[in-house]
Image 1: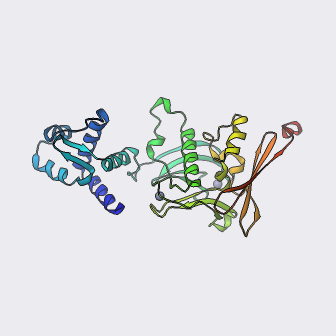
Image 2: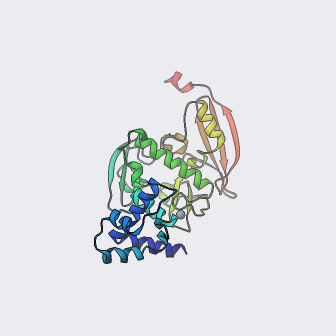
Image 3: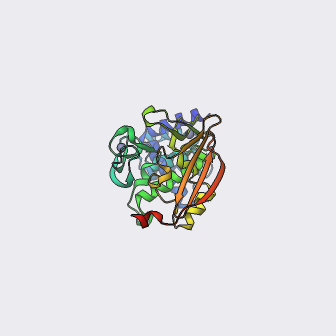
Length: 296
Ligand SMILES: [Zn+2]
Ligand SMILES: [Zn+2]
C-alpha cells in the first residue's frame, strides 16, 4: 500500500504540470481550508495552461492526490503530504549548504566543527568523513531568511533533541514508523564503545547517536539542567560532555548495563541504561561546588 502511494508521488514529481496543479490546489487550501475547491477553469488559469490537452492528461494522472467532486478540485491529504515534501526541499539531491561554523569539538580528533548539507544529509564534520555525525533534517530547516527563527545551530539542536526523544519512544524521526531503540556496540571497531541507535524497517534510515544522548530527555536530567539554566532542548547535544562518544561506563556486558555520568555544577547524576536504552536506575551524588575553578 505504502509502495503504491510512493509510485504515484514519484510520477507526480516527474512532470512539472502535475507539480503545478498540486501546488495551485495546495495554495487554494492554504487560503481557504474550509472551501479549498477550484473549478476546472479556475484551476487551469491558476496553473497557466492554455492548451486543454496538455492540461487534462496530467490532471487525470493525479489520482488520489486530489479530490474531484461537484464543487471542483481540491488537494487530498495524500496530496498535501507530497506538497509538504516538496516544500521541505528534501527531494532535491543536488542542494548544498554551508559550511557554517558550529560550537564544540570533534569527538575523535578534537578539531573544530562545521555544519554542511550535501548528498541529502546535514553533517556535523571536522572534515574527516569517518568522524561526521549525520542529521536527518530538511533543507528548509537551514533556511535563515525569516528573522524570527533564531540561530541555525539552535534549530539543529532542537531538531536533534526531538529526534532523540522520538527514537527513545520507538518512533522513526524520518517516517514515524516503528524503530527499536538499542544500546549496541559501535560497528566501527576503531571508534570503540557503544552507541544509541535504531534502524527503521519502514524507510531504512539508520539513526545513531552517542550513548549519552539517550538520557537527554530523561526528566531528572532535564530538571537538573534546568536548575542550572541549561535548556537541554536547545543546547547542541554534542557540546555536552556526557554526550561525547565513549563517555559512558560499561557496568556489565550480560545483561548490558551502561552508565552515563551527567556532571553538573555541584552534582553528578548517574543514569544506568539497559540494552533497550531504558534508564533502569538513577543516582545523585554531590560534588564540591566549583572545585575545579578554585584550583585553576
Ligand atoms: Zn575529527
Ligand atoms: Zn523510518
